[in-house]
Amino acid sequence: MAQEKKKSSIKVGIQKFGTFLSGMIMPNISAIIAWGLTAAIFMTPNGWFPNAQINNLIKPMLNYLLPLLIGYTGGKMVDDDRGAVIGAVATLGVIVGTDAPMFLGAMIMGPFSAWLLKKLDNAFQDKIKSGFEMIYNNFSLGILGMILAIFAYFIVNPIMVTGSRWASIGVDAIIRVHLLPLANIIIEPAKVLFLNNAIGNGILVPLGIQQAAKVGKSVLFLMESNPGPGLGILLAFMLFGKGSSKSSAPGAAIIEFFGGVHEIYFPYVLMKPSLILAAMAGGVTGTFLFSVLGGGLKAAASPGSILAILLVAAKGSYFGNLVGVFGAAIVSFVVAAIILKRDKGTGDELAEKQKQMKSMKSESKGQEMPSAQNAQSSVKSYADIKKVIFACDAGMGSSAMGASLLRDKFKKAGIKLPVTNTAVRNLKDEDGLLVITQEELTDRARQKAPNAMQVSVGNFLSSPKYDQIVANFKALTQVEDKPEKAAKPAEKPGLIIGIDFSKVKEVNFIRHDEHLGSATMATSLFSDAMKKAGKKTPVKAVKINELDDDPSHLVIVTPAARKNLKLRYADIQIITVDDLLQDKKLKQIVDKLN
Image (cartoon, rainbow, N blue to C red; front, side):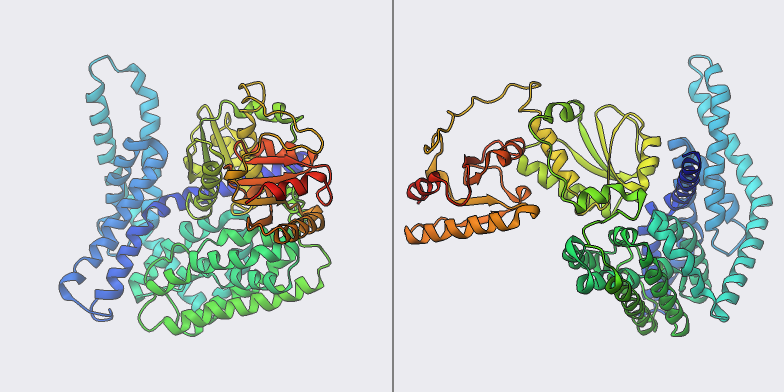
């Protein structure tokens, strides 16, 4: 147990450090893309439409704007606005005096200077007399900023220039001997452990910008953002997968390849760890093809979408980029197909082979909603929730889509709570907060918001826990915390009471994965009875989470299923029958429908 905790703390520490690095780059990706597009289109003489006047913007953007933004962001992460200002001031010292873009210098001086200012404030701020706060705040930052800028100019700048030169020489040497693809043996497993943003934006992007400034493009931008390995794995699931993993793969492939949200294929790899070999093989293949065919980008491709790659591709590199992406997809597909064809699993046990993805097990087994008997105990903790936040590593992409899905479910269920998304690093501990994260990030979310309710999911795009959350909020209106609505008259055997058939536009039977046959048969028999009676109201078998909460739905259920239905919906009309296939009420329903 102690060893597991130690491993977990090491992993969390690595994630936090990597996320801290990427946190300085991610907010400024748009500015990096702006520079990359300007260079790709207007740089003289290699741009698509060379323009000498616009070309004057490119070097100042690269040498001053981008490093200052990174230093400002790094300082803000440590000490809010004061940290941001001193981070930018100190970063200027490391920029001046060299033509090399000082991204790594900015990533050091920004947070370091903010940390020093924070220590200074902690030591002296409480001792400042009333009325002198502004004097202290302005001059402490100004004096320390001056000292740090001078320190950066004379000490840090020469060290970073030498280090950048050797790093550039090392990268060039590795590329010349075609060893760069071997880096994907490390990159691909690290991505699946949610270090993708840390590696891509914290390490490869700064190095890639320096290389692109020197030779006009860089293959480093493609090493983490290549959507090919993930696409190949998802295509293999489409053809050779089983159960829910197969049915969900097509949608995931579209989102991963065109939307650039790579996190969507991570659960597929985690449930069958041997698939990491497919990701590694695809990554190595892609980087090799990029290198030998002259691929490369002018700026970071963020998100890692094929569309983003095409938009920031260097002139003359489109062929190499496309061959690299699709070559990676083909190789990862072949390896994944071999693994999946030999696999004897059901495809629905989404994380049984990985302890850290325990939530995937409940997803694969179609975990049922809480019953009416235990609703009160499971719901009480939801009574004080005022806001729901989805938190992922970058605060974009997968968490934004998860938040959108839950907002839609809340809207249909009549739940009026704000649902937003953010990066884990930006979480704040506040009252009434429900935080939803992927399993790998839950430890970090607890550290940032220890008093929040935490819910871990395996996949932001398809989790039955969303239905549990909805049910718990709905149950707040049906347990003793709130008074219930006046109950309808009890239904007596053979009688139908309290149903407004004039509002019914659709009849539904609830389809459960474990009772698929009975719901399908009941739907078929009831549809036949409707046709014989000349009635045209549509009859459908649906899953419980596919209903709209309004009286136009008439749902026919057994007493056991009614409990779960009432927890979820307040306005749909429900008729309870003892037997879905031959209850006496079924004929009466047909007679009363339009």
